[in-house]
Amino acid sequence: MVTGRPMVMGIVNVTPDSFSVGGRFLGPAQAIAHGRRLVAEGADLIDVGGESSRPGARPVAEAEELRRVLPVIEALAPEVPVSVDTVKPAVAAAAVAAGALVLNDISGKLWPVAAEHGVGWVSMHMQGTPPDMQRDPRYDDVAAEVFGTVMARARRAAAAGVAEVWVDPGIGFGKTSVHNLTLLARLGELAAAARAEGFGVLVGTSRKGFLGAFGATPGAEPSAAADRLEASLATAVHAMVHGATVIRAHDVAPTVIAARLVGPGPTVPDRVAA
Image 1: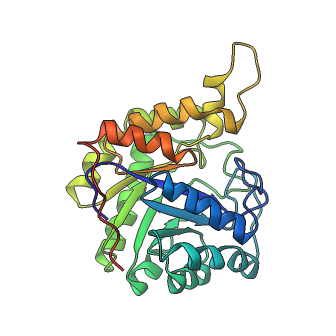
Image 2: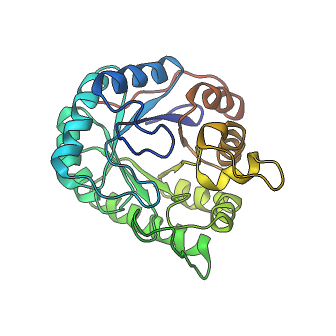
């Protein structure tokens, strides 16, 4: 995938327990309509997920995840590049058969599936698993450990034949607020290493919990997920400036505007080849 500006990945969560949308798009018809709205707003690709990965989320049965995502992927894939947000090999393979072109993999383990089926893969970092990742995350040097892990996996995937690989530091996945901010502050290091080896960089901060404190008045409760647009955009712009090539976002229209301003100019993105 090549574009003249950072790409924007629109989020379609077909789950009842999404931290941000809370089941608003649980039915296929609602999810498909939402995906089309995001495309109209300028999304370069749509990320479809059927299992929540919010802190504390419990796993979903494979059959249920397939029931949620496949109709949405089948409907959207002829209209826009689609990625599937899953950790299950069978779901990933079925999603590719339905038209998905990228595996957005929080587990960091699905690169063999991507290699087998000739699709792109996101190497994301997560310490622990969604049910336990936020209990007590610890690192000696969070940037060195996270960047080293995702780059090693990316190299392994590329050596196995995965043609398009993105590295993702996994903001909010087994990290404290300080860890998240440190990773963003040092993102340029990851971007430089990735660029040197032909990998893209994906960053997703949209509406995440650590941003809640930045939208709250002193002494008040953190802002709700839907009220974190300003902080989401600020971190997205920071990530773009420091080398992110894909931004995963709920609020597509303003993020696309930001990408056009940060990038070399508004260009027509090259779509993923089928």
